Image (tube, rainbow, N blue to C red; front, side):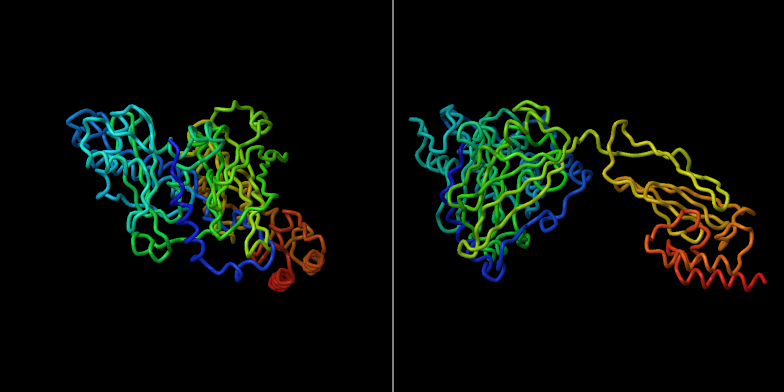
Length: 498
């Protein structure tokens, strides 16, 4: 199940040399952090993408024409729905890490089908399958190509093979996880790197029984990519799997390799290392592997981190946040050091917020009074990423970050509550209060020059901290603080009332 990597090394070297003039980018040591890579996806966006992968009815056959793994051999063909689901699966992973989508290379699908047939006929997983004695030579040559890699003009691709009883879209999960390679070749993630390559623009695949093949096609330059792909090339400093930001915990196990592809021309230094940070404690990866001559590295979580996460070596990741630093890349002729710094937020897909309820949707307050409105997340046990309370009616109410609603003036106002993109409203009716008088900072029941003086003293205060009640009474211009303008407005009230 190991990917042939020779072509990709050659392609990436050409790609990197054409990408940019590194000397204009790096004049000193540089840190690429998560603020400079693709914006993190929300949990809801990720779940929606995952749910959108499989649309075909798999109670029917995966095949439009059944393959034959014995003479007379026949390639067969996959149902169109299977092809589209598999493409959605490939593009889900590319989207997850911030890469452009690929298309199906239909003219090579038969080649991959023949490759799967020869593997199933031999019952041996191989990039270089032997020819069954009764197989036609022309059929075999195409089958061999479907399992291997191509390096001829217009046909640059990597070969990937798998033995997996899953349906075709789910087999992509196995290619991405690369558990087989991780266990047998000390951490190579060739299949993953084959699919998650920035210059990949198309893919073809085949299946016969439990055997599958996958070919991924690459451009050798950005210009060629843009001419071959429906999508413009997007350059990010680096791509990582697991990726920065929200990441479904079901897609990663403790014994998988982490991998990073650094886009710019780079070389390794002897001090190259990967460091994990969890709960304030740091762990250095004890297995750190370079991927040939490419600026790709793979590394595994150390046993101490797996133990502290409270899981076994083969367990899926728990809901947690892990910060990763990869140090030791050298650029600009080895003169500048580059550090990659990003955080992965593993989340449980079953604990995302689908809805929420408010204990009240209409409340009544007196001027100067404050309250909170409890909310309940659904389903039970769901964890929200973001709960935002806000109002546009600041003339009548104030709303704090924790949801405390404070009444200022008589009238009607609306509070918005947004939980992970789901928004609901609360209507607030404010009645007058004879004990609450705007501008009355000394609480003596009248607005006078003394209140203006207090406002000026508060304005000159170096602490910048005001009593909430002072803000409610003295912030006449609704800018959430007491300043010289409020003192002036208080004097205006004093003059008006006298």
